[in-house]
Length: 298
Image (cartoon, rainbow, N blue to C red; front, top):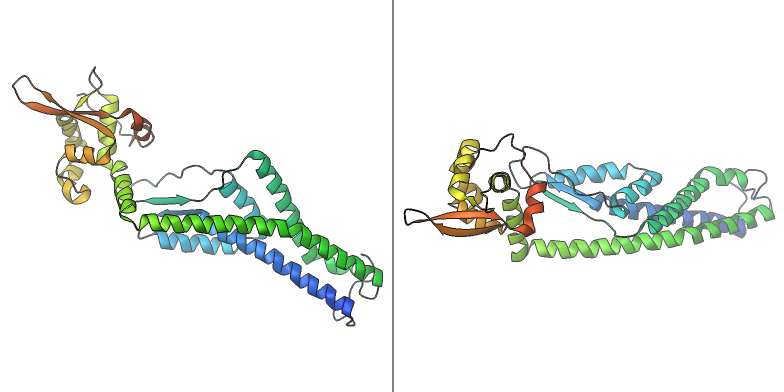
């Protein structure tokens, strides 16, 4: 496909018109791929409070809208095909923080294959945009035939990528629909409340006390833990009912479903509450450790 560069307005023939048609067809195909990537990347990460989430989403969408096809392709591999891991919530957040992520579970061989195929699509798109015209001579029948074959080969190379990304978008939309239905259900509301309680300051401090200063038998006296919390978080304890929905630390611990709770007899003939982290949830408490500088001995 070589010859004299095409004039701005070449003499119209059916063959030349067909070249123009296939150029437009391929450009729309590349644009479709770009829009599918933008759709996937916009929804791949979403985080914030109930008040800030929409603004965060709009900001992310605007940022992604400005990215090139090559930038989108690389970010898609980093954020969606490769697990980007859990995002830490910012410090000093005094309301519920939500974080959503969409990833596609696959293996390294597929990631490598997809990366190579996506690079070929990006290169093909750039070649059409920047280098096609100087190589095509409309006055030459051979050059025009070569141009038609080139454009067909280019389309054949890009179609599988378009179809793959469309399948990913379909999966994302199905998952988003299921998630929205769950979040609006009673089960979803309970799950949100449970996660908020489990990540709350008081619960994390109770878990820290149980981990760092248990008795020899592994249990912690709840009243003793309460004394520590009263020194470290007096405001949280004072407003426990309005902030957490529970009047006592015992009811708060029960609501989280993270702890084993029992009543044991005292020397005076009464009972006292003891608690410990349920072994199934030790990792949760460790990862969310509030990191206070010191914990008093029980």
